[in-house]
Image (cartoon, rainbow, N blue to C red; front, side, top):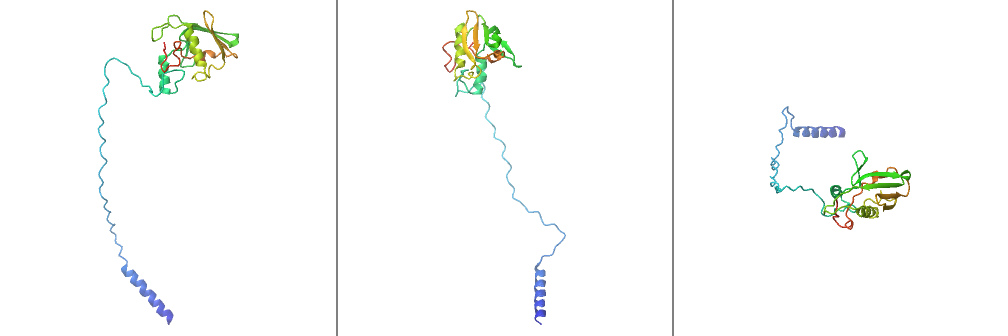
Length: 200
């Protein structure tokens, strides 16, 4: 008897739950409406670019936080400018070949242990003074110093001298490819430690 009563109560509960379930129809549920957000604002108009005065000057960017000294400058922007301000005795071409710049020719002796350059005549610095062999010796010795950007390429140089006709460089050991390393700027004697040395 108790079982029959229990089953009757269970059936009653199930029927009651079924009555509260909403009928399923074939109509789709309405799409919920979302609030409309304003579209992104149009970009603000920028101020017109300042016009440069048309006075014939050509300007280049440089870092005013650094110097324009080819031996001590560490900022790449300024180093690129230094290549326009200072010339080497020998420059390196795009295919890594040496070519004359402030010298007319060069030669190697002793299997590449001695290197000599003939200085070009009539080279003027930006202040109007003429370049001398003293300027070349001075510049190369400055480039050898530990604080110089070029010290690594010249660390095997044991002596730099003037023979009366040529600049002579003596190496600790033979290096037939040394001319490629001579892309070293030449400045006027006495100006190598300034923020803007005198170049050619």
